[in-house]
Amino acid sequence: MSWLRTDADTIGAQEEVNVAFQPVDDETPVVQRDDQPGVRAVTRSLDLLVELSKWERPARLSELARGVDLHPTTALRLLESLRSRGFVSQTVDRSYVLGSRTFEIGSAFLRNVSIWSQANQLAEQLAESTGETSSVGVLDEGQILYIAIARGQQDMGIASAPGTRHPLYCTSLGKAIMAELPAAEVNELLSQDPPRRLTPNTILDLGSMQRELNEVRSAGYAVDNEERTPGVICIGAVIRDHRGAQVGALSVSGPAVRMRESGIPELGQLVVKSARAFSA
Amino acid sequence: MSWLRTDADTIGAQEEVNVAFQPVDDETPVVQRDDQPGVRAVTRSLDLLVELSKWERPARLSELARGVDLHPTTALRLLESLRSRGFVSQTVDRSYVLGSRTFEIGSAFLRNVSIWSQANQLAEQLAESTGETSSVGVLDEGQILYIAIARGQQDMGIASAPGTRHPLYCTSLGKAIMAELPAAEVNELLSQDPPRRLTPNTILDLGSMQRELNEVRSAGYAVDNEERTPGVICIGAVIRDHRGAQVGALSVSGPAVRMRESGIPELGQLVVKSARAFSA
DNA sequence: GTGTACATTCCATTATACGCAATGCTGTTT
DNA sequence: AAACAGCATTGCGTATAATGGAATGTACAC
Image 1 (cartoon, rainbow over the protein chains, first blue to last red):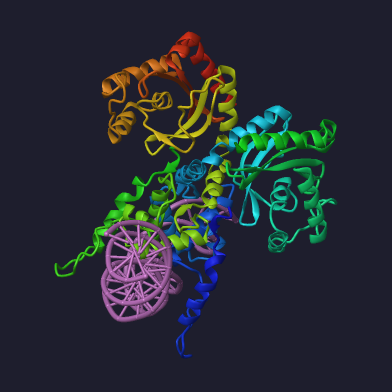
Image 2 (cartoon, helix red, strand yellow):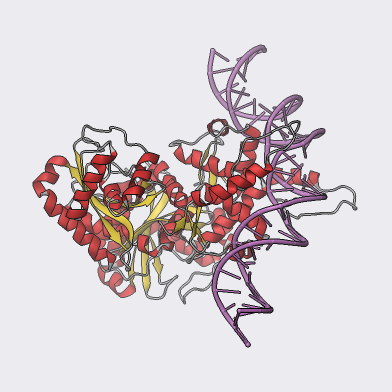
């Protein structure tokens, strides 16, 4: 999503402005340390919404308020606003759950980016031809955001769900995408989210990663060789828009033994072929 | 979603409060007619988000501001807040598009209601066994909200997308669900969203609808006999949770000729069977 | 029945969101 | 080129409207 302005673009300018706003004489009490852009009530309500989305069960007012460090009174009124627009709902015991409007708008996000609205079909096709679980993801905020997931017939039920995120360094999607980026940008991305050892195979240092990305470039596809989950191998390749710009990546995932039986290079070619066909 | 508090529940109490806030003496200027609950800045920003979700192309600041009737300055700062939390992004020409966080949270909405996270599989199974497009939807705000849609092999490409809404009175999903509700509630729902003639077959008056719902009850499934789109027939049946409570509905849709060939009663039984199997 | 934790209402206080006006910026017309 | 037109952005004073403490109401536990 490189054509999008990132928030960092404006932080420089923003900070200058805020510095100028600092009280000049000492007796002015510094009430708040927020140098956040925009309207406080809004960012707070969005924080509440994000907090709520992390709860797998309905959340009480006080729990949410604690989670985002707000006075319950304040949280209550912000949640009322969210409720009036359908972004949250309340159960009979007054606990909060996400409202249907979140789903409505989240769907519009996919629909309005035409290339992603076909992501499901792409994943389904690959899942069908391989029998393994297949995913489509994009680079977003330095992570892989899963757009679509299709379970293969031989599904093991350990696939991530759409809308979740994973690191770049330990996924085939992430490596396939990073292989397209300049080395400096890769280093930047990796230092933002420093690799942690998730399995014995996880690639931890920059040097190894750059070498790995070279291999990805020459092969045309990336392999996650049990680097995130022991026993699971993923194979991914980038997908492009009609102009050849990279817009995301496609992968198959399955148990290591079965993937090796099918043949990593063969699967790699299949993924690349599907990705290419889609780009048309 | 009857276990959820609707906003109407609190409107009574809320209004009393607001009435008490009305200026008592006439010289106090009545600055705003908003009797909306909650925090103004927040509801405004949510309105902006909803407005943006309706745009199929990136929207300019001024366009959005006009759409929700806000001063551009105000809209700008609200959008900055939305951007800082990833709910909107900007393209290089500073137009606004929905941000990835909307998708992330919209997905969480499905994931956190366990019964709906399986909706995709349910739709896919029925699409596979019938070859026709299959949908899962729920009653929400007096409409059908589509949760999942699976295209059949013989797809015609005229299916609604997940996250969109349709009226109750002209969809098999809507009629299947209404058949489970008390007559008074049906009347209430229909008067909120009065039927309009979409095709020659659209059911317009309450009496006909109640008679139609009787047939639905005896058959166990509902038929949309070209009532919304000419040439398209849908067949729907409710799905239930493990306790037997109605949580949504399932349907197949296809061209009238082909659906009649397959046999409406046969398809009906198939839909009912799938819906029953799912409820377990 | 007493106690605790939580949700909600009330209210004063002042911070804070607001909109006007002015400034930049971009792209278009003659 | 120059002048214009439309839009995005910044600055700033003002009054509104968001805030949090305190009080009240409610639900549940012991």
